[in-house]
Length: 469
Image (cartoon, rainbow, N blue to C red; front, top):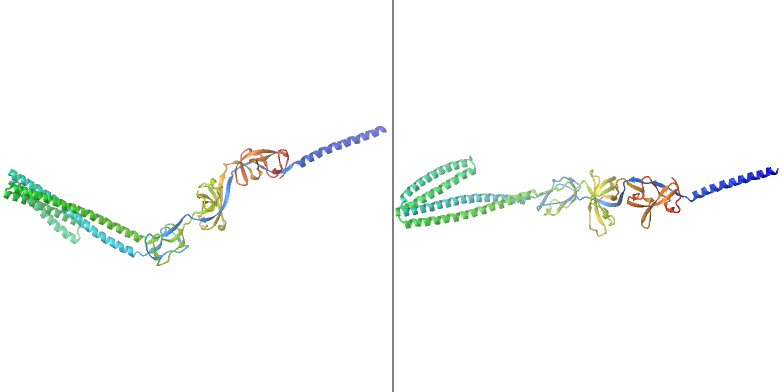
């Protein structure tokens, strides 16, 4: 009986001990779970990251032209109004051209006079050249006659001179006959002026040759009749004087020809200027676009260089924005920009930086211009655009983690890397950030997981985690 009681008591004791031991294990596990920090995690992944800055700017165009007149005159016609579309080269304003037409007629009349004077000067030069040749021939004859007197051979020379005179007379007669025939044909309109002038020049040359032959013949006759060497010497001196006179006349004729040519050129310049002025009385559009301003009325006097109209071009516009000194070092001409114009229901389009003013303006900002495509002419000058500039960009397929998973301490960045039920504190080197994701240059590998929410409650000592969805 007592043995049974002892056995029962021992059984209860073992059961109690067992129950006590099992209860202690469950309490320990519950205690560890209670000490873990609930966290969410994100995988380290590869992606392209761009750092951006956002601004608002007004749309404008660099393709704007002021329409001015190159001449001064009264406006007789205006062919456009504000809002009209015009093409480059269209006649927008017409000015009174009567003054310039009068100048053209006057210049043309002056040119005709200059042409006639030039031809006359040319003929004078030709005649003077022939005169020099004739005087030099007479001088040569006088010298020959003088030598003949000295040598006693004047009679033979006289026979030769007589033959030359007869030949010159025949040549003159032929030239005169040809001239008379050409004159009749010219008067009938059968030949050109140049052909008639050629016959006239030939006649003048033949006359000079005849005169020269006659002079030589007469000089030698005088010497022959006198038989006086002194008389022959005087004939030479007279012939030399005639040569000098003929050369002076040639120089004068050449100077007159040069002056006539200058007058001819000046008249031609005046004609060209008048023609240009007449052409400029039609004021044309320098570019294609819309008339955005009109500063004139019909009958008004247009002055040279004064703006009459303004044309605003179409096509690509520009958004002008003001950038701080903290951002401008990261910008460059050609840099990427994203533009949205809400008022025109324009979704985001790509543009590029076209201008970066290197000088800070009075507001302490730097003016930047960004190209804005406007192929369908939906956008208008003066609209406001939201502009996002790409200030930095990671290399393709860079490792990245959520930006809010990164902590900073003493100037260094770190994350908590989840591994099972524990988190490891690890230093990282960061790169480009777009506000949502940040590039990891070193410290992590693809496929690892970092703690996102709950990281603030972790430390190297308190690093037990409970990952929740």
